[in-house]
Amino acid sequence: MHVKKTGGQAACRMQARFITTKAPEIQLIRRLRSATAVCNACFFYKDGTKKSWDFMRTHDSVAILIFNTTRRCFVVVKQFRPAVYMCEMERHDPELFQEGGKGVACPPESLLPAAVGVTYELCAGIIDHPDLSLEETACREILEECGYEVPVGNLKRVSSYRSGVGVTGSKQTMFYAEVTDAMKTEKGGGTVEEGELIEVVEIPLEESVKFSYNEDFPKTMGVLFGFIWFHNNIAPHLENK
Image (cartoon, rainbow, N blue to C red):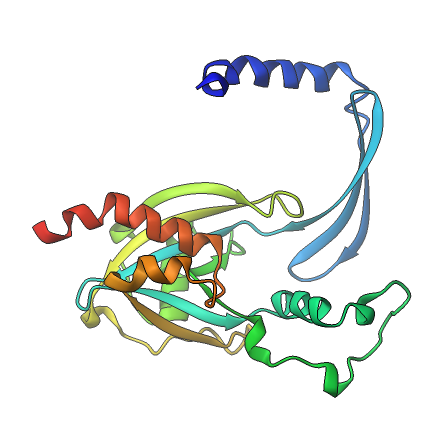
């Protein structure tokens, strides 16, 4: 309660402190660029002290919490994430990732099963088509990844938030969509052109809370937030539909 009461004043003091220091002397160094991300180094002053921070600029994105009303289940996706796999590899064999080991191939005997890099996620996609609205992008991702054809008007905006604030700071906007079996027009699974290999998974409503807190099923924060939001905002009214 104390933080809530004085939050505005604290925010003002923080902003003023940044303004009166040596900022905006900010130096940006671009280090590496790929098709989906730009790696940068940023040098800035905070409270008179020069600091540095590495960050990546990536596309903003949309995520969609999908609920199939025909069978009362959530529709999520499961896919292999190289970054997750490499984190598990480093935990398993730290010596492979020591400084100076540039371009060292992992010995076959050190490789972990690919399953350790598989995560459960909401249907989602980056915003890389400026001619499409967020809603249109979301509907496109639903069709490509999960195979359901959802009209733009059927989407409900949940919220937007920052993800990866320590590394990317990109914004993700979450939508909620209800689908039926009759709306399944395609197989889903992602697009071959984009190298996607996605498995569509259904989580029964009655098992969703247990699934959320079961760490044996690696999942994103979007799944946790989406399921909690659903149980707070949609589930109480399901019986009335």
